[in-house]
Image (tube, rainbow, N blue to C red; front, side):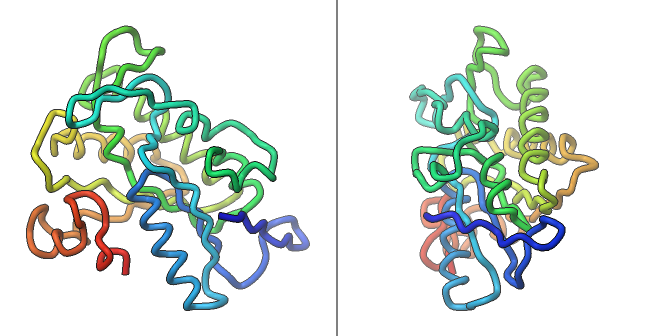
Length: 232
């Protein structure tokens, strides 16, 4: 995707009639960003979307993550670099994530992010010690709060409003890594962490309806990701 820098106004802020929307996060966020981009193509002059979401990415950076099937893998440098400044020409590279540079160049009016399920999985974070941890354990709870607050500060640093979409329960076999209680705790941690910032919360779970019920299964094709219908 090509980043479209905001045309400067006389005071240096973004100008123009289009609402500038930056989307960040994981594969669910990516689907939301793609859906907004499709909508934008049919509604010229309404919004311009820059989708900076990437499959499998966390907000809470560094270390290892354990997926619901039990496999372990690296969070990776790509997903851990959202606060690293890069040159503007690198922002369109799919192997580069830099929210701090994206907001500086794109100057969004609104930023949308989904509170990712990856932040409810088991994690091994070097700065937290040598033991696996997760949401609901004090050290990781504090880490979640610190990371989401920093992310929100970065994403709103040019004056944008941040909209975090509350994470929904998944309609899949329940494992420790997708436990509904963890998801609820994580949502509450983000609300607490971002108090006083330019942030609102979208009630994505209410939009879906009860997990596993007909409306939810129509919107989410696999209990987590959006169906073609859900993307409309």
